[in-house]
Image (cartoon, rainbow, N blue to C red; front, side, top):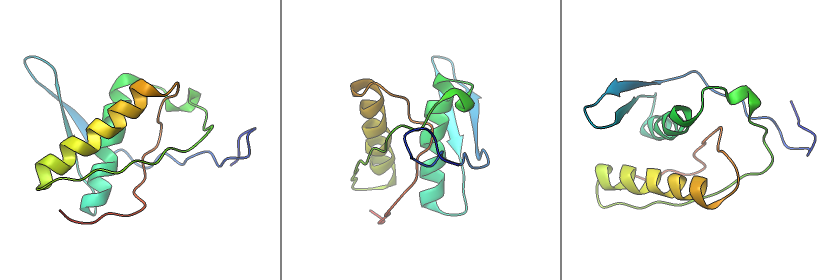
Length: 105
């Protein structure tokens, strides 16, 4: 399906994440068939916590980012930090995250 700008509307995959209670905030828990999918899902969980209706988000453009880490936790931190920066620096919301390339740390 295309929107008025000619970009394909992203298919929102099945939700493979959950929100867990935390005393001071929220914990995000994701899973997937691969580590890359689990990372995609955790980013979508972060953005999903910011809105409840992806159907109202129109796909206007794409955004690419890179993240590196010396272990899994630092890679995850930098990955989410990059997407949070994109959200705060750009005037749009990210409804779908997709890995183009994933290299282990």
